[in-house]
Length: 464
Image 1 (tube, one colour):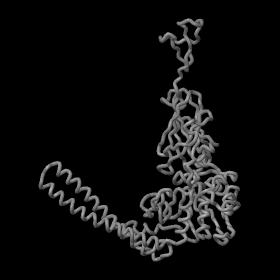
Image 2: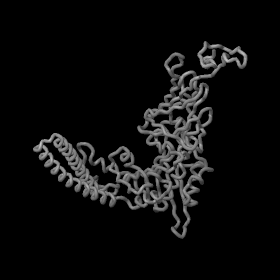
Image 3: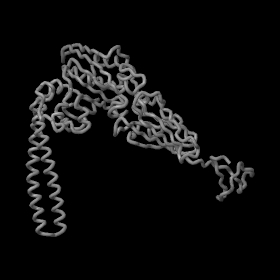
Image 4: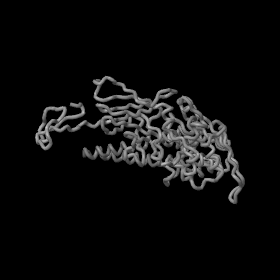
């Protein structure tokens, strides 16, 4: 009997296995082979070591055909040991499309292909830093047929693989991916990026119109260490810049021209193994210098770091953080700490009153009520101080911000293709909602990450 077949009595009774049925047709006692090969589950487990909380787009194909549930849009898998599975028949081949290549309009580079055998399959995909010659072909870890209940494979997610699964835009794609109101000068400049720049500098000359005089913008592209350290063969001009979404460049260039900024420096475009999935999917772009202003406000938080923090500015009010702002920020930080203590006391007093009420002791209840009243009164005062010092800090922060930076941000926030904007002054996680951007207090990891550059995330729902 074939190991993939069992036989069933057509009358409903189990029988001994038989290689071939030799009975004649219409014989109710005939033995007929029935293929009852159990389905195989193929699972993928992803471990990204370069960043926590990574969410990777993916689509699954079986025998070269993308499954119906991925036909319109990719799904996401966590890079923190995220797992997904697909059920197939023995002999079928499973492969993945990842990152921006998982978007329905592309899917050009399948990776991590395995063929289901006689057992379930688990493919462990682990990110691997540095330059490596490894391919994306999974390698069997337990070749012994009796070694475990599943066929275990391992595969690396190297910088080379990241680059493979990151879409490389071509000049013919650009027009369809730009906002409708992009000027011809900006559109031509963006197309040059995908045709192949000869140097890391790009100049845009916009002719005069009824709305504005002639304008010029010089863009400088700087390479980042991350792709150079993690891809075996990489060029910023040929491999990095063309993997970023055209609408991002158009937004940054158009905003600079509108804000009358003559020069910008882009610090990072597509990169494989640093930061959020936005940069890895080609939807993130960073600006480090805007019209001669270095976009860095790390001094604000550093003045309060450690036991020997100066608690004051450095005396240079032209570096985006004035001495007055540092003083106002320090007052707000202290007021916030006191308010946190007061709010904690209110919470504890309420819990004490609840316990006293349940116990039914009148004297204890009275004392608990007095405690809550005093705590609430103190909390009202500390909360008022917290709000007052917050407003004072906001005023000094805004007063010290260069006007051209404000104009540049305002233009970007109007762009339909910008979904997120983070910079040293403010954080806007969703430009589509009605909420005002929050000030960057350099407390969270996302805030400290963007204390020294401006970042935009392109709005492209087909990718993320």
